[in-house]
Amino acid sequence: MDITTLIVITVIVFIIAFAAFRLFDVKKKKKKLELERSARILPLYKKAESAAGLTAEDVLPFAQNLLTRYDTFLYLRELGELHLFPEEYYTLIKGAESSLAQWLEFPTELDACPDEIEHIKRVTIDLNGRGNFIHYEVFKYRVNPPHWATEYVWILGVVGPFFDDSNPYDFPAATFSRVSSTVDKVTPEEEVKWVHENIGMRR
Image 1 (cartoon, rainbow, N blue to C red):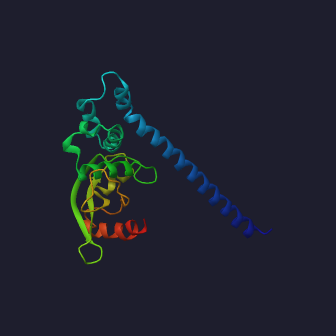
Image 2 (cartoon, rainbow, N blue to C red):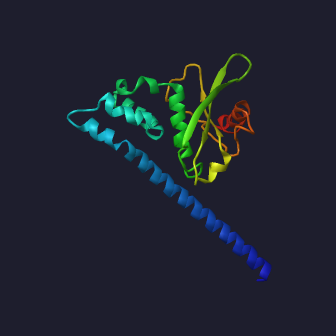
Image 3 (cartoon, rainbow, N blue to C red):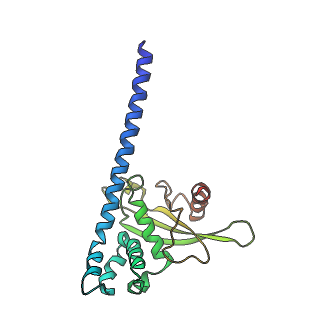
């Protein structure tokens, strides 16, 4: 075996080993994140099982928190206790905001919850020119040092698609964000177009 062949084989083995390690690492982090999310609303589970039961006051801080809002809604719906969910957080925007924050937490994405997040606008697309509309909610977010994405300042995030009859906390299948899509470089309309064509239309 000559040296060139040996080098090629070594490089291939290294690439395969690295890919396998990366896949294992991502799966491990994803599992850890899922456990953390369940643990975040564990106090609600315990209170619901107690003699006193859940109250709206118990639920409020979990609805206020970006990282527990979505799961809190789903849990209350499962319990049949949605009347305890605060009305001010029962909106499409608040649900989409929490969905984006949870998505950004994934280790393959931002690997963190934004320190600041703001809704910019809704962008609507007419699917076939006949008034069949779908909607995407566009946010901007940023993180504080020492996170690696601090240099990008305000980054765009897109959540959707939603329809005219969508309800708050309906699952948005095309939630996505490209860290390079900052507010000074890309318009909300341009980012929605990219997400719709590259994510939404493929799901």
